[in-house]
Image (cartoon, rainbow, N blue to C red; front, top):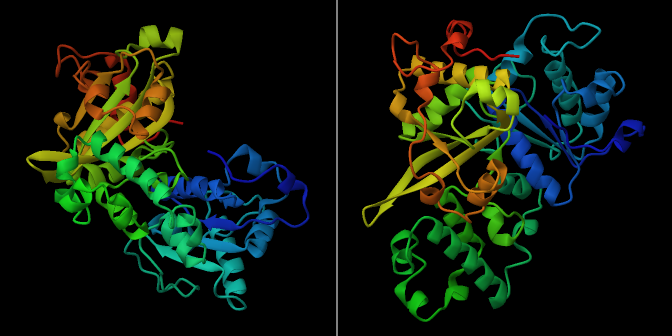
Length: 414
């Protein structure tokens, strides 16, 4: 966990943030953190409302700090999801310590935002991420969008010019964008002559006469980014990755993450790859503590000339197999997926054998510098071996831990 604020803010009598997020829930948290990272790259000061971190507990009383943040932040972004509403609707009274488990923070933030809304209207952006009953919510809940994104936030608050101002007008800059498009298409094994089959603006006349600068514009970039489900800002040099590397996945978030994987990955015919630097073995890994692992999800998008085109989601929880909490949470996560009726064929274990670290490989992959086929080229180990009993699987491994986990599938280990 982390927060986007400097230590100097703690000492100030008046906190000043450009954006302050109010939200709850594991899946929403990851979206907020990703957006906050991108906003900060544009020079904004961003407050991420994560109150159980050490930094936040070191400030003055949380209630006072919250009051100052949400009163003085230039803009507030309120994420309304089921987890948020659950906290808000709890009937328990807030105690003096502002315990994070009793919903006090959400109730207090809502009170501040409601009072401020009576005087201002354009400071607040309300995002409803799920179908929820908002009848008892004391804030006008007409939502401007149902999908949290950098583009929508900047557009809503009048900063849309930041997205494209560097590249709108010159042939040279548009050709630089063309190079990024070419890198993306090459990453997906789409040849130049196939471009018109994917994006209608790339006619054969444009290709043959090299007139890409005539058709490249912000709208086209947005179309490409949406079609391939990649980060739009890489085309404008505001980012260096096509795919975000998420920092919060299964670790201590088993139930929420397994629900997300079931609904957003598995139901879309996706597949999960568990990547490690070598075949997991807790007896060895607990001594060396250097066998990191991460997850990559591959989701089908569309076909072109009988080729399946995919998008990818990358989750790096900075986990080592030698750390028991990482193992336990992953195994609980796998058992949880099984409990939802997901077959073992949904996942695959693979080892990265080149000289680079796992982190460097993930960075290269997310940036489009290495293709999936060269990154994940064979099955090296079987995750089901680590969640089966010897009676189920003669190759069962580490089954001494299974008794501690199987009765707590879908539960996180803290």
